[in-house]
Image (cartoon, rainbow, N blue to C red):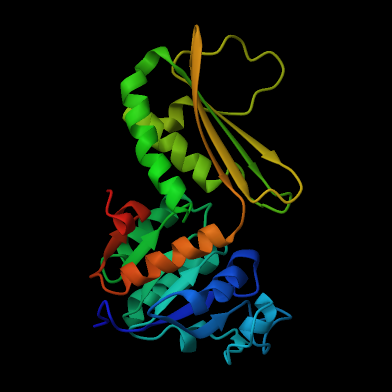
Length: 273
């Protein structure tokens, strides 16, 4: 069992990607964490190269490989930001091998989320659509804001990300919408409106609007607006660098390394659940 003072061995999946490379770059500054393996798809051009070199930092002595079954070993912590199918494949190995995991992948289906919950009965798994400490605090504030303001205030969520992002709306925007809907006693599947076009008619009182923008190299920006006749209250989070998410993921890795099997959130990591 890894202790709080011990050094946890980390496996970074998607190590040549935008987030994976920043996690590799930030790892040397993370107390009690050590990079022991870096994963990419079996046909990725970065295979065989040093993970640190690919990340644009000093060499780590860890070559990027495609053998997840070798890399995910007992006691190790997987950190992954990739696609749902790959993350699930790796999580099955995590549960089978006695490892733990931090997952920042977004776009999971309901069935895939159910499978993750089942795997968490055998392994400590932390899943979050956003690893930012600021966003985690914002989610808690949004719940309180929605409960206090109630049905008199219209809720609209806007998110902006870089042009390369594949899913929309962002996982963070989805989570924000779910948190607000739950606080207001609504079912987001029934009241969510994702963009408007043409003549949709007057806004209904209980709908929650979500609008996605894609532009340039924006790391991530989310605004939740509560508006009523006479005033509007907004909560905005802006990420200026991906290192924000990388550092949050490393903080989560230290957390799950010492936890029993279970499905955890960033609020658990911060102790504000």
